[in-house]
Image (cartoon, rainbow, N blue to C red; front, side, top):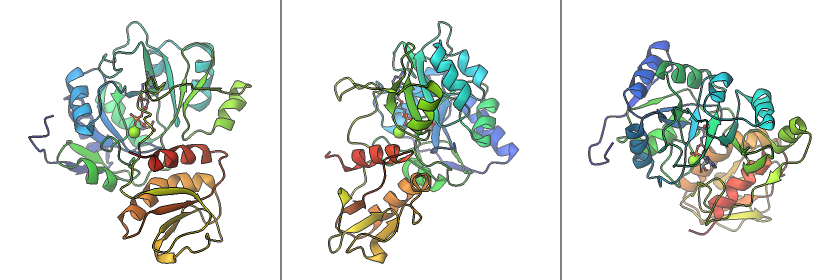
Amino acid sequence: MPEATPVHTRALGTSAAEIAEGGRLLAAGCLVAFPTETVYGLGADATNPAAIASLYAAKGRPSFNPLIAHVAHVEDAFALGDFPPSARKLAEAFWPGALTLVVPVSENSPVCELARAGLASIAIRVPDHPVATALIKAAGSPIAAPSANRSGHVSPSTAAHVHADLDGIIEAVLDGGPTRIGVESTILGCLDDTVVMLRPGGIAREAIETILGTPLAEGKGDEAAPLAPGRLTSHYAPRQVLRLDAQGIQPGEACLAFGLPLPAGATPALTLNLSERGDVAEAAANLYQHLRALDAMDAQGIAVADFPRRGLGEAIHDRLMRAAAPR
Ligand code: TXA
Ligand code: MG
């Protein structure tokens, strides 16, 4: 969809009729944003190269960055890729859920090459959200869905975030309220029976290692040849400069706090707390919303208080490092 011809972006709810309409739009090759349990996704028919081309254009995303194919049921996932035994075990343990598995693409996979960026592997996820499931079923094909933000922006955890980034560019947004988890799915590489962490996310490392019975291997990707090609260091970028592990807050600086008491020098008017009670899952759910709100304040930079890296804290740390990276 050329950006030169603005479209009217429809704000849809999640009634059966509105989900059916979303499914019709997707089947016709249009772009429809929808809620998942992690963040809002920008959906396109993964089997339709023209729809995928317009998806890359709408996001301003390089087309060498492959997309996750979303399906409604675990059995549908097994048709898209060849799952090594450990991947099958993880699929059965965590799907539907906030886990993406990268496996060798199956010979008869209907997902088009452009959606896979020409790779011999494919990223697959079965989301755990009734609206996402119903929409994918209504569309009748796997749905490619990156986070529904312009490339490089903070990921959307509400429909309003999607409208702010993509109004006039996509056909519709289904509003299912704020997303439950708030950070993107954990991505694991399962090209053979070794499981590699490609992106920390909504399913904690500890839970995955419990199922596998072994520690996860670390991805050795770098900027030139990233294992998850979209994981460029500067990402999730707010306008303001971010300062991590802040022990004290400077005058005029905004503060992203975790737990109580607040860091020394924090001003209540310029402070948002990820979780007053110090809960990392609650912090993940608030992360992008709070980053956007602090970024909109008239402050001199954003200082981020220290927080634990366990559980979803690993994904929060990963996203904040990227948000703080020089660009
Ligand atoms: O929670 C999520 O995962 C959300 C919701 C909408 O499902 N989606 C999401 O998609 O975060 P996206 O496109 O923003 O991030 C997908 C990441 C990218 O970094 C991409 O490079 C990587 O997955 N990826 C996709 N296919 C891959 C492959 N075959 N091998 C390695 N990485 C892959
Ligand atoms: Mg993204």
